[in-house]
Image 1: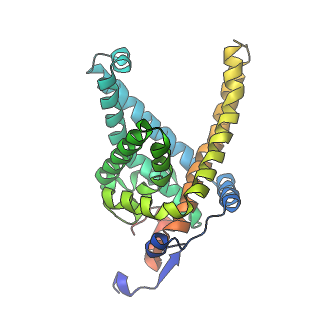
Image 2: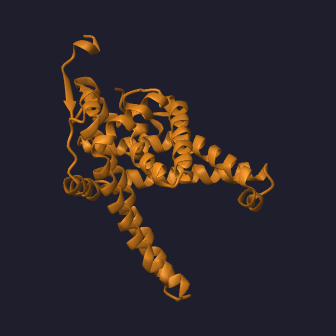
Image 3: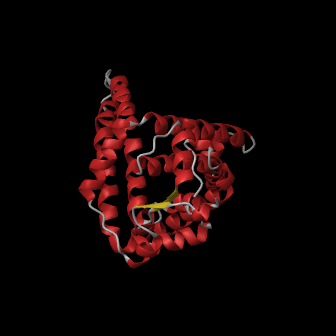
Length: 266
């Protein structure tokens, strides 16, 4: 039986509805649902982020050795910009897997750390999308900050579009800007709450360090512990937002494959 003839299940919104603003975002409901997913499963996302961090650090060490050392890279703006591009190219394909973990959680599919390797075939498109989005946001921030903040929120769901909907980077960027404008302030509210929680969690650590307290180590441990919840919460929130705005179309066979192998081909 061909894939086209299999029964399909549409979960959440759709591109057509998103472009018309026919979706609703409830700030409280999104955060509560994401928190439940975080409590149920956060290990996969945390391990995925650790692997991505390790890959990023490896790239920094290797690249800096050819660029005059870490100190030179930090002091030289051109070297810093090049390093940022290299790190983005290296880790964005793996972070795409982390993003998709949040999407899978939003449709009640369990995940494992190996999912970060499941979308490497789309890695080049993901990397291009990440760089283009970063460039647009950086440009916006130089223009009185407001355009940059707008794009930071509006482009937050581009990577899943490139992976799950198999869009080109430009098409994903344009679609995100068009679709998120209807509920942009609610999206901003959600991300602002997450940022506030992060700020509150790191504040005690900063105070202890500034006071040169002997309890600074304890502060570091507590902060890292809080991050093991906040990072998965962030990606689970994004997964829910993606589901509600753009939706997912699953075939029977694809849904079963996702549950068994934690990979997805839409």
